[in-house]
Length: 141
Image (tube, rainbow, N blue to C red; front, top):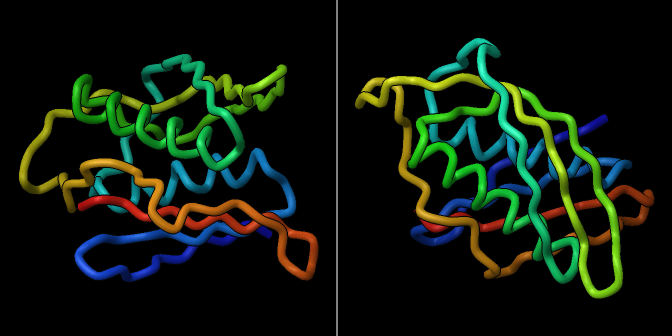
């Protein structure tokens, strides 16, 4: 079972995501981010492909979340679901994803909260005593 919960952090906001699968950590982190910033759940009329790299899994997670923010703020694209592939090559981790979602018209009614960026502050992806992955990310709001 995959869960995410919000973590209060001074002026910022964080998430904690748990899953047996690393791919689900990335998917649920993206879903959590979208639930923070948007009041809308669009259809799946549009698709986007992204490829993101990082030096390790936590770095890749930050880069992925910031890419979702970029698509949201520059193209008004809001992700509803995604198919993710994680790969490794010497010195880096790679995420390739097919995003499904839609373009929306921004308004005060459908934007909940501005998120400036996913940060490296207190960032972690580790395994708990049950062998599940646990990720924590703090967003600059």
